[in-house]
Amino acid sequence: MIIKLDKDIIKSYFEDQSGLLGGNADKVIFPENEKDVTNILQDAASKKEPITISGSGTGVTGARVPFGGTILATDSLNKIIDIDEENLFATLEPGVRLQELQELLYQKGLMYPPEPTEQNAFIGGTISTNASGAKGFKYGPTRNYIKRLKIILSTGDILDIKRGTLFINKRNPFSLKLKDKDIKIKIPNYLMPEIKSAAGYYIKDNMDLIDLFIGQEGTLGLIMESDLVLAKRPERTMSFFSFFTSERDALDFVKVAKSKQAISLEYMDANSLGLLRHKFSNIPKNATAMVYFEQDYKKDEEKSLLDSWVKLLEKHKASIEESYFADRDKEREKLKELRHALPEMINEIVKRNKLPKVGTDIAVPEYNFSEMFTFYKEKLGSSGIDFVIFGHIGESHLHVNMLPKSEEEFIKSRSVYTDFVKKAVSLGGTVSAEHGIGKLKHAYLEVMYGKKNLEQMAMLKRSLDPACILGLDNIFPKELLK
Ligand SMILES: Cc1cc2nc3c(=O)[nH]c(=O)nc-3n(C[C@H](O)[C@H](O)[C@H](O)COP(=O)(O)OP(=O)(O)OC[C@H]3O[C@@H](n4cnc5c(N)ncnc54)[C@H](O)[C@@H]3O)c2cc1C
Picture 1 (cartoon, rainbow, N blue to C red):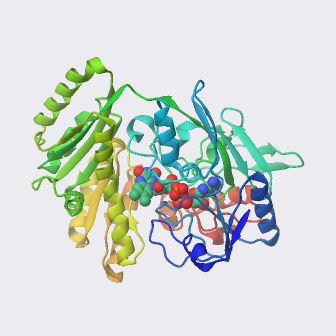
Picture 2 (cartoon, rainbow, N blue to C red):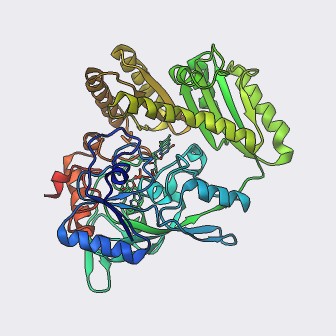
Picture 3 (cartoon, helix red, strand yellow):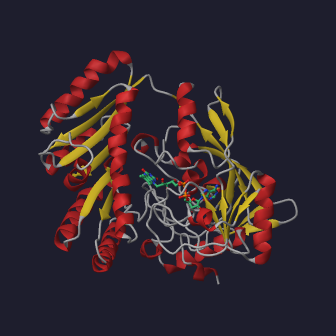
């Protein structure tokens, strides 16, 4: 293993993309194998020294930002152990970069269907946050593609869990049998909304034990190895970047497009397009909304599919001549770049303003989406704060990013955010659909599940991490562990 004490190296691990400031740690350790990880964790547990597991640092909730103790960086645990082309799964160490995996799979005519998130993320980070991506509309989040996980607990115990082998229910504590002991795990009693959610631990009655470790945000154990489900790449995919001059027309288009077997359905509002125009001058001047969608197809379906999409776009007054269409991978990459540039530009502004990110990750049930959207627009309109709205409209999951320019505006944004959270929860929604809670959203999780359930989450953590050293202050305040 490699231990770095150099201040500049350690400092680069004090931040992620959330803008959370004040991170600090004594050292960063880079384990190179399972034995290193076990030794580091056991040693830290014996001294009750906090450990923050670090992936690639693309997270947006401060989850990998340490506040004391040691950083356990997974950068050197980066082997692609196996790609089983016949049985369609990949076995990976946690520090493999998503981009490296996708490129390798591409050459083999395969894909990792959820294509979660920012390409620089590590696989371990995406599992630990249950990340999802633009294709979530069809394929769902990371969770749906995890077959097996090897987890190293802070006690040094190693769990190798295959999906479908161990189940926990809410009534009785679960007895996890290890070589020399049993660990009793009692899961909290809350009901998760029946929509995409990454808020707090995944809890369901008769749930698969493996699901507890997906979306755990580095609080229960280190993900050392994973088996991911793969799929064959579709024959062809068409992508549209369609511009509208009226927000209403765009939203009406989305309602109908949802039933048309797209694989992704994404939205950008007028302010998002305004921001993008600084980098991409070819965005039509009069566009006030954009809907991005993709669909897989076979060669002989191309003409009829294309015709039917164009008809639908025309019906909803999209500017067909100015919209972009791609049916080749190279062209699609350009569109993806354009789409991805927006969250990057927002994160740059957040960093420049030196205030933490105030970006929502709320999703609501489809039947309540219109009410939530109207609420966003009314509140934001009267707040006077700069904002952009974009995201996964196919799953009724939009990111509202407020961009405060001063401490005063920041405080106001947080208050508007709390109003959004209360409204979303009253509509059966989640406070985090994909980013997780990290260190910035405890209060919102409490609105969603109540203090008692946060305490039960802390109890659950204590059963798997009895020294209470892992990912402190992620998901719930560390004070609940006392
Ligand atoms: C431009 C941009 C766009 C984004 N778009 C999306 C999006 O569309 N969807 C989405 O879901 N997210 C998105 N994100 C957020 C981010 O990319 C994801 O949260 C990603 O999964 C984080 O991975 P990471 O390796 O960077 O993890 P980090 O930020 O380093 O860590 C995140 C959490 O995972 C834990 N962790 C990391 N590795 C391990 C491990 N091996 N074992 C246990 N715990 C571990 C850390 O302790 C921490 O709690 C975006 C971010 C950016 C910057």
